[in-house]
Image (tube, rainbow, N blue to C red):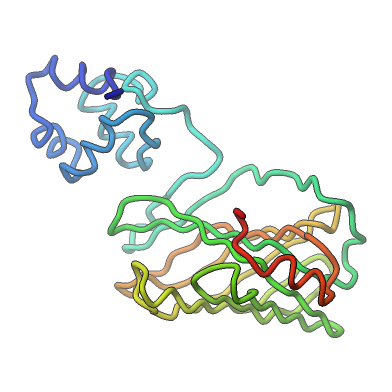
Length: 233
């Protein structure tokens, strides 16, 4: 079995068990074991600092990938901000910005699960309908095991409003409803809306993370039927 040999070597050189090493950097033994697996994800910033302090090496020399565009930042009040510093540029066909955003879009948001110590993404194909400055966004029923909607107000290239998601009744969150606020900005192509969500966690903490919508097609009976499926199909 392939393993993160750099981290294993650093631990064994200090004659530490996995449990002892995990205690030094204040993570669970399960997290440490996941780090010793092949191709581990980069730890959170606070964990990076503790690892580098404990072993005297950059985390890249402990078998972790170099820093990436998205990172989790603790807000000091129990919540997490999932930051994306360089949003990718849309490659979809250009659409006039600050116009009618009606269409079928691919919605994707990211969030950090503190109980699982991992970053996750949620995706839906959605129908966006605009009437003047008012925008309604609703997920297609077969595009995900959860249902999601937004109610937004357009001001030029800025869309601001609220979101709600009813999670999968048989999934990790057992049908819990989450609500929050959102602000999106259209890129110059008009084919991507990118911004951030804000919402509450299971312990009442306030979290944030990236959310973007990528234009797919005009709304018609045919395109609704085409996109009423899982995004990865």
